[in-house]
Amino acid sequence: MLSVVGSISDRGKRISIVSAVIVVAAALQLLGVNPAASQSRSLVAYAAATGVDLDTDDDAWNQAPRVQVPLSAQQVVWPLGGSVSLVEVQSLHRDGVLYVRMEWNDATRNDDLAGVRSFVDAAAVEFPSVAETSVPALCMGQADNGVNIWQWRAGAENGRPSDITELSENGYVDRYPSTDELYFPALAAGNIVAEPHAVQDLVATGFGHLEAAEQQGLQGTAKWENDRWAVVFARELTEASDEKIEFGEGVTTDLAFAVWDGHEDERNGMKSVSVFVSLEIAGDFVTDIQAADSDLMLNLMISLAVLVVVGAGLTLMFNAGRKQ
Image 1 (cartoon, helix red, strand yellow):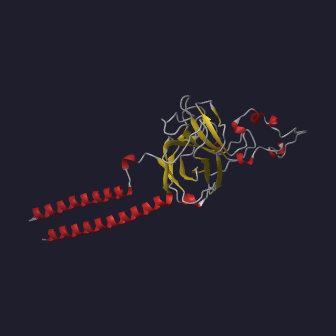
Image 2 (image 1 turned 45 degrees about the vertical axis):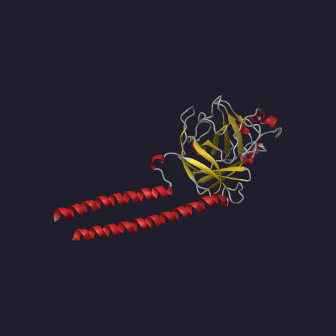
Image 3 (image 1 turned 120 degrees about the horizontal axis):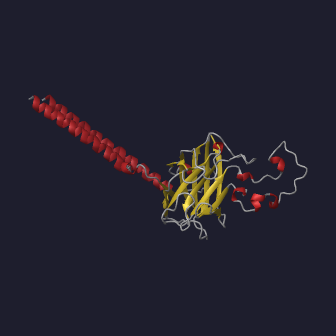
């Protein structure tokens, strides 16, 4: 009799374990979770159901999925470094314009361009110059496979100083000749870092071959609040240019991210970078995706409730059998 009860008890335990595995498997299946792919990253740019502007707090971003992308210190070329470990990214498109939003922690706001030892916060998004091609070299691309970079720099939206006293309030000069570009050597020489624009559309075909794109249709804004930066880039899906990436519904390409922390004196190659992740320009509206997610969650709850009832029934059955 004891052996029979023991057999029933052991069998009940085995069935309980199997039932638990079925519950977990069903939950993962309904949620679309793939544990083996937990290290992969992909971003989907859904169509915004309403208008989107450059405001980092636009209501449309409350609907767009967030993807966390790990960053690591750049270790390919000198100077090495980078201190930011994570960036949250989102993307939407509306009326022929693609929007990409980045957000990350930064305890200090560095947007002062007033001296040679002042380094500002910055961020960038990098694409292969041609969508649906093989991934180019992560940093600055390569000669036969370039990259298109969207960069934002804090403080640049304020433009260049109109007077020398803006650089040094206590300074004194006998005469400051003019505000013409001739008297700003870096700007006159075409140094893109000296350009008075918060965002720039750049192209590169390897280290030492970074330059401003001929067409500058890129727009962007940024906001620092509660120790976090948020930056929004916006550009038309298609542009008449051979050097920059073109997008369109149904297109899948790659993109990578970079962040500079001015408080840590980060500049040039001293930055935090990500690996390339996938970007899909979807035709679905983001509200349709949310509705599908709601239906999925409802189905999950119903399925789990059924499994709980079945599990409870099995437990009662085996407890009754053990008592006999």
